[in-house]
Image (cartoon, rainbow, N blue to C red; front, side):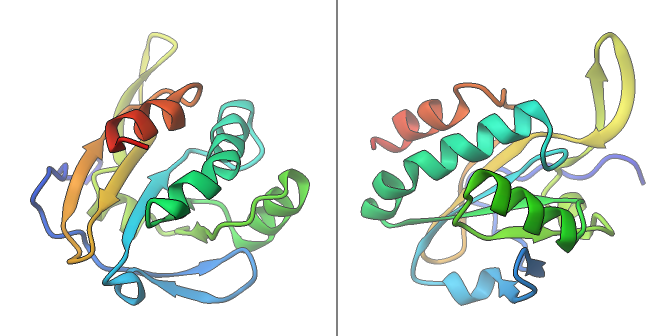
Length: 157
């Protein structure tokens, strides 16, 4: 299975428990009652992913003030996520999904056009999940640059 089913507003967000950059287990279920932004990115310490992560880092204050917790998910292992967090002073959970199970559950793994070639890989995607665990926004194939500003606009922040 190379492509996954895409989520849409109103869908129940698939639950998950993944390990973060500090080795702690993080479960989506533990955020019930809070709003969560879950974003999937291709690879730690690459230019686009660093730009996007730093944009989220720089917007954490306004997102938190509006009640949002940010979770980043990639296929990177914990050691790489630790290095990424330390290098760029990232203070939100970066979650390791090496087997891609969560990527697939969210439709964030599949075919994409990369420089004119069709390849299978991570689809840069962002999901906003409400207090009840329902998807309120499902954004696929987002651009790394300017995405967080666009997301904040959509959320009225």
